[in-house]
Image (cartoon, rainbow, N blue to C red; front, side, top):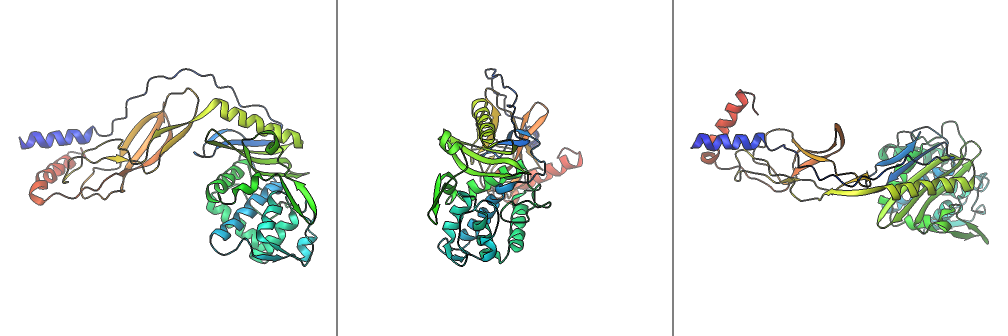
Length: 389
């Protein structure tokens, strides 16, 4: 009887990595190719999953123009959240900031401006003078602030970006990519929610001068609530945009459109494509058992395993969910703590692994007493000798 029980445990172990049954085929939905754009390079990304829906040369190193200011503001608002900077801190405008060329907030030299007003002047007016004033206040100089920008880019995984200034004024060593700008936009949305509403403001008045936000879609599409435009002769017309429809947020980044109207049209085409033909599928929920593999030498014979965050994939509408595959790294031997990583969940479509997630123990399993566990311990050694575990 003991041998039969141990054999059953061994068979339970060997069978625990079976995939979940495939879902019934969904209705076939035709997905067209992405739209043709005037932009030189672009990307369409889902904000929740971070998955790229469509792209064209999205990792090409290109001048980002005033899209740079997304990083300038991100560095500043992170400092505010860390308590190193206050929104009501007063910044004295230097002669250097006042003389900065390009788009302006129309600051006066040697006057004081709050950090909050500078942030509005950067986001809404695209003020180069405001960007330099804020950079000098935080780091002492443009060069020192650029080092903060580059360190932040590394932390966020922006591998196609290098910043030389807080404004986006042309420099041969100053570049980014549509993919990196979409990643940065996603970080702003997730990390800086207290300041994200700045990007939806349509007007800002300073020094008696009222300027409009250059993002035309804020007037044309009620679902658009950010983020930033840019333009130089070298960069063309650029824009990073985010929209929220029915609880789902998309991000676009277009570089090198050939006019103000066309960069807005390019962005609108991408948003239409993403919302009409793609959806997010919630496949598994955090804390819900996806399987109960056998566990050796424990006070219980099985262990519920699952994921710590909801598993959401961006998929073409109508596609059946991918196959779920539970893969355990090694035989499970008690004791195992709750939350310990015990393997991985693979989401598979055909031969392609779409995504992997850590598989964790959903509850703790204590080691059984010696008299209860020694037969399993002995049988596991036998299986090990024969290469079974």
